[in-house]
Length: 351
Image 1 (cartoon, rainbow, N blue to C red):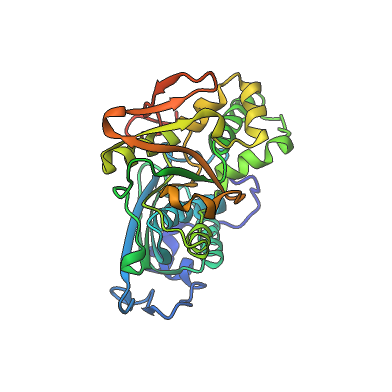
Image 2: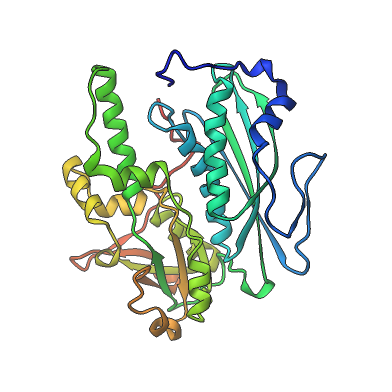
């Protein structure tokens, strides 16, 4: 994990829990007016005045959610923040603060955790969120990182999963499948490296895919964009577990069915190319891959003209009455039932 054997390494025990927290967070300073008190007391103090507060949390576990054979710690810190901010943006909110807690084994020196926190600091700077606290503890099974994100929104602006209506349009941001195919490339190269540690992979042609896997970006831009267009989604969710799973979530919460059209699903050319290389169906990857952190939402048909032609948004289908079911309409005009085959952390394991 750390190739430079000459690099100075500090054992975690030299600092102790509180010394480690102080060391890792010494460069974090609150920037937002809503942060009254951040790190350094028994609890943080926040003041959101009359706005609604949004809270989300995620836990990432080594060997389940990430593999340090190819995931740099700085990227892991950045990604851990993105995973949580994406949930805030999926509520049509503005992310404001995060807390970060880690459980770490003694195989990690202090310098490794400095890299992790450098990624967290970069993410907090770019997305304008304050790091206001957290915890550290020891682990006997590698690294675990838990981030809790807080955000705010006006009560009338918050979007839930259950507000869609029949005939609403299904709209998607960005493109799908790149993160999953980036993971496939990294897993393949890991196996090549295990067989021949002297091999040097040439990953230039996979740059977009690998970046989408190792350093995803949450869609902070979509809320302000929709507000400028005077469009309020009727329901919304982020794409963390695959498109089919997320559509099913919206349908079940809104008690509706849906039709999505295969030909409308946005795919980057790099995804199509690498799916051909791996002999995998690109539509299946878009439906089931996950970790794209794009936003899926529904809008009234009356708002179609407001978003039409916007390069960030693609209409991929529409909601139907519940008894019509949930279907993918193929390029051959066949209707196939949508099945949730996305990521399941209780089943998926990295060996």
